[in-house]
Image (cartoon, rainbow, N blue to C red; front, top):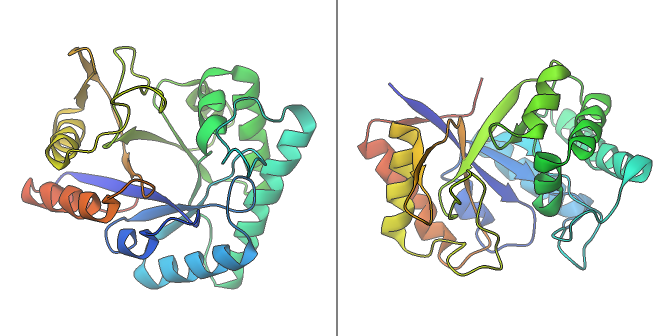
Length: 247
């Protein structure tokens, strides 16, 4: 039976966290950088643990005002220190609950900077190793982040998005452009099946591109995210795909 992980970014103040925890097999919890605080982190980690959902850290640029979506917001040693602090804070909470972090996934602009900028990718991987040695890193396939994770001997979990439009080069259409986020449930479920069962996605210009992903991201910050999440789960189950966290 085919398997796939479903992940969602939680603890960011969105309305659908609890609904998503009934669907996903892993989650990425924010702390302080772009959103969240110790209280929200504790609550979200407890809810995820109770549901048997794998817990990952979701560090972003320390940019609450810009929700971590401003590129190159911080650089160098200060950025590495911030990433390490965010990861370590969640790791301690999870350890106190008797668990362990399963992965680390950068947020927003940090995600894309680490994807395309080798210096940011190297720094992010170094921060992850220092704060949570042996923890897997989540990011897009064929990226600088994957390259440096592999160099460091860290497991890399390739990610794709069911509710975002792709360009023909395999990158996502930027959020500020028309059609960047899919709103139609049928479009989302069709992309889910294509990514999972065929290992490919149809780009915005009609090109069909290969995408080898082990986890699919569901966004909780769009209207109807709970309905879309349930539709994704249902279409995967209808196609004989088992939903589970990566091992």
